[in-house]
Image 1 (cartoon, rainbow, N blue to C red):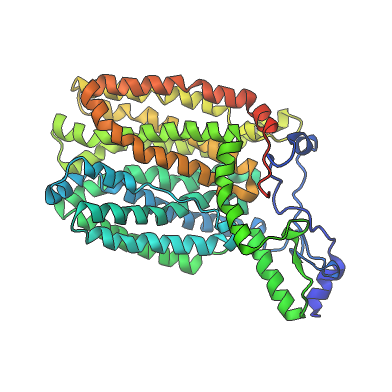
Image 2: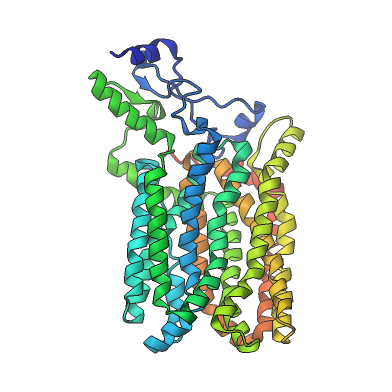
Length: 509
């Protein structure tokens, strides 16, 4: 036995059944977790005399929770960077779709070509094989399919290629929540979530601006060549610099290494102590069904997913009219029409900044008022304010565009929606991470799958609706719908804890 292994066996207390992060609050009654005032998180450490392999100490530098701040934020920035590229691909093609339609002789089918790009696949596989390998494989899968999109000779080929590209591109969006939970303590998750969320929320705004000019000045195919170049270069950097962050996988690797070095077959990961022994197939099956379990057995998750999906669908309904309104009504070129998305984009940036600065501070203040006892619902009160701001844009943008008011007015009218959307999305995502830190990727996959499905299908109804009702009443209908959902954040804030505790879920069964 090596000297380091002997020290591990003699000097460390066996904490094999403790978690590397706070326990999932849905897994056991919240009262248990809430009775004690904000304890210091204990990580499982090695006790080789008992055959348990964990971290070398509470301060083990290999534990992602103990990474230096610069390393944590750098790794998060890598994930966020690629998370920008995937949604960028989703919307970059939008302004140039008219050129593709002219080449292929297509009209309505082109909307489906855009929508299919947002088809997601949940990524709970990272909880079996690690974040890094799943993220890397999926990102390269996304990059390669851009070649097929660029070389497509008909609409059917383009739809299929965008479908597969969307499947690969969904990984970075769903894995980000897991990386945040892996590395950041609860007190920093609001800021970390805001930074990670910049990509999927800013991308759909930046995309049309760049795509409009590319489609107009070069060709629509060059949109995909650019995505190939940028995505490939970015993923190459991620390949070199990225690190594994999922603690159970890191300890599983450490266990296998020590078992070989020490010639011991009795060693077990501290994260597997007391758990049912599963075959690889059973483990995979359980991991894949977790998002569905959360959606069908947790009313609070289902309601949050529904509300988030509604807001996301409203965003893409916005996108169905903007390009056409500013080209046909205001005489913008296809390239310049992309600049109209800046109204929403600036709103996104302002909303993200507000949530990044206030989310954690408000949570800490509410926790202090609660005697130091944390509850995930402390993330949600600000949603009430932002949910009220969100509907303003539909009435403002819809009627000013309908009455041909000066072009800057409808663009400014999009700003409240951007701010409101961020104020709704950020608390929900942080809430889910706080509830399920050990399964944050699966939990976020639930949110991503439902909202992306709505974001893919709802725009198909956008053109017929606006053709029938017009811009003014069509957008007003969406505004009234958003107003009807305003009470939901109030219900979440007031009764969320009661609902969550009444329907707890054990995700390990």
